[in-house]
Length: 250
Image (cartoon, rainbow, N blue to C red; front, top):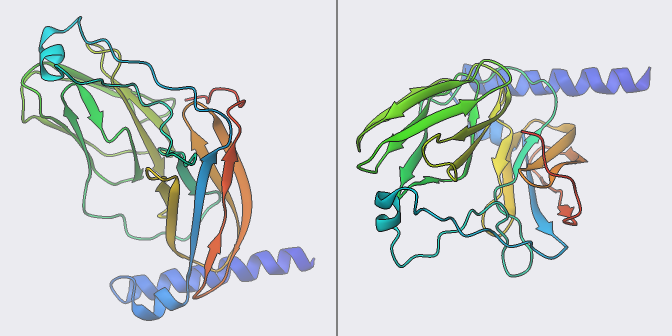
């Protein structure tokens, strides 16, 4: 009974905070002090497996653009002390609705590589995928739900826009250049982040409460931890992959 009362109180407080922010036309200073922040770092404690060199010889234009460069697949990107980049971090659960950002999530195809490799987007937020290469790219999104598409971009400057409709991890590839990989973590709330080059991440403006934090890496899969967030404070939650984890499902 006490657990149910605590859960109801947490959800009601979260709803009140979000409602106040929306009524004010955005996140006010008051709303910010009524919420908390989750910060953390993700590390690979085992030996980094290294990344395969991308062989672009099958497309002479791609090879020419990268002449003299050593382009790696970048499935596992670590800092000198093991910080793990490109981990998608989100809070599990359902939250009161908040406005979807008007600004699009931007991805570029440059020198036959997706930049960045991983992004996050809200359900209902526009994702723009640009072709900066003067050659044909194929943008093929693989989805178990309703986020799939398959389009061609034959010349530089073309931008494909799509709006995700469901929460999932979307893998985007190019049927012409098989090494090209883009990962889009789609969520229906704003409480997510992608770890940077040092493995660090931050999720801001989180309503007070106790949450399960989920970390997902394309090669090592999912880890979860519980964290409690207090108003006006920062909570810390760190993750560690050993390197022995099984490859992640898409």
